[in-house]
Image: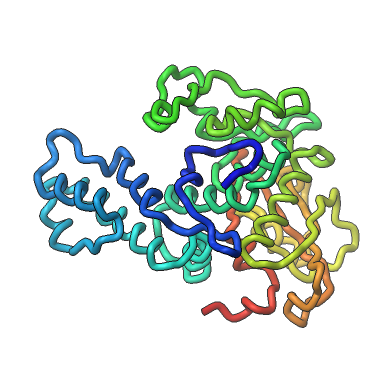
Length: 337
């Protein structure tokens, strides 16, 4: 996978192959990367059964693992970690591509660890955005798999990576950062035209803030990510544009891009007017138009779809990109198998 500038190295995209359609094929190397996770690598005091299992999977990461092999592990926490890991491995290898594995999780509401699903979203986005040279769009895409702390000040709504913010001032470096030779985060910079060129070399640090206020490039970039996500996963072309206000707008269909956005969408659907407090929490409002109306279910064919993203009471933004898969009025997925 080769863009002119690489980014998000830690998601392991370089360990994956692509099929003719451009989707990601699971490789043994990608599966082995999970075996290098701190929760899975056997510690010095690990029992022989755990060491044998780990060694065997490094030799063949697709081999079947029996219940008795996991049950033979002495440490209870290790047994639980291995159960989760093998469940995740089994799901990935069941499907031909990572995209298909993700769609199955979303459409069938399969319960798997949030951290693993976030990693899957990141890898798929890395693929979908491989030819993207816009740092604002890549930074906006981070919001699909990493919660954001919002700082609302005057005319700005600044999105800051929640985990990065919590690490500020700590000199420690994660094992993954050390393994990849990535520098530790020391400060957060606001993404701007002046520093956008530095995004690629620091993309795995998640240490650039993004202004997503109305009229700013960050909000438009988020709309572009929505467009690319839908095109890549569903092969449907849409146009997405930010809108400032709803004025006598037909509210035929809406999708909340997070739980709060869904709540506000429901509120409007029921004929209520937004109060000032709720309006202030609505940080993203987009109009989505299907370029081919035939892709839509008949009852709303040709109507715009509104996408809402909103902050929680404690000023967090936790986007749910799966809602774009399950919530749009798409004809061919009206009945989910």
